[in-house]
Image (cartoon, rainbow, N blue to C red; front, side):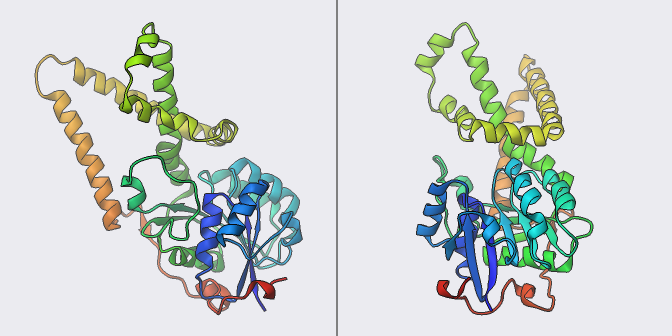
Length: 329
């Protein structure tokens, strides 16, 4: 009997996971759904799914694993209406960049006997240094040499932990455990804050008295620094900010303080202050890139995850032969 993995959301993340699962050793059927039919067709063409469904309710009751890859505000609707219909013993994985709301909704809408866990896939170092605008096309190797942040609730089952850890192995990423609140705060720094700063830089320029002249002379640095504010659909980003509002505010306060410190350094008439400041920033950047390339994390806060073994199909995330599409339901 084939085990079913239901992918709800076939954006770059969901479709890439589906493509990687195609190479997994397991008697599995990948079933896909996305409210955007274009994304569904793209995923099907890319080989990310074995079959599509017109609505997840058609497969939710038989799915052994459900992977959400939707804007976080859309996840609640599906959990509310479909959570009670999930299969007993099923594992629900959520991949959005804000996890606290999902944990709350899962606790509210999932019946006893279901497990849930957060998993945030992180691209490999080559994607950080390739230059140019990142492609939104799904790839089976998108997360190869990257990382998978695993956010486990206090009552996480061994099965859910095993599935998440071994999912990392399938996508060729290094798994690590991270606290829920630390995860959401960290993503506020690395995902939300850069977009807001990009928008703020553009607004500061647009509201200046020299905006007309600035538009004439602005070059690549300005274009690159202000491009982030148009990379995410406005409604999606706004809802994500609202759901993670306090942590984003905290990170904004930290950045404002850093700007004050930078201003004081620049205001100094004597001394190598600004040179030292920039050199320190460059060293931090190089250290970050080097750490990502080496994938060597000694920090106790980034706890590497041990491979978890457990009886049953979830021990190695469906560790039998791949099913043919026709074998699925």
